[in-house]
Image (cartoon, rainbow, N blue to C red; front, side):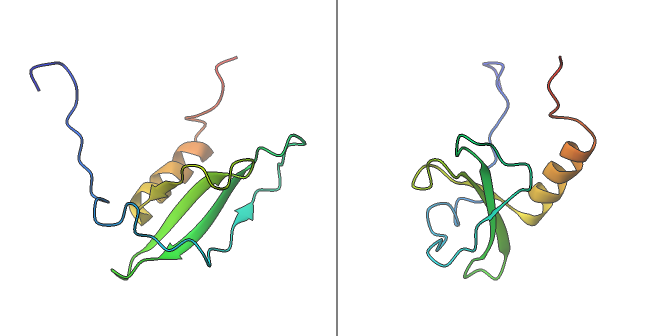
Length: 89
């Protein structure tokens, strides 16, 4: 793009805002914090037949939810295991 930004490809446009989270079984990792702000994840089957992984902050369960396709979730987990998101200090 001429303005120096990367193009955005939204391959979840048909899913965004249309996942039924009412019956989601949220899971929290074993490394939880005392302040109530933990990451929770759930696997949610969409009407398109794809199971998406969703993530939220347990301190704000009504807040925003990140939606991952199966390939995105796999890449995210591999990045975590490889230390891609570790603090630099």
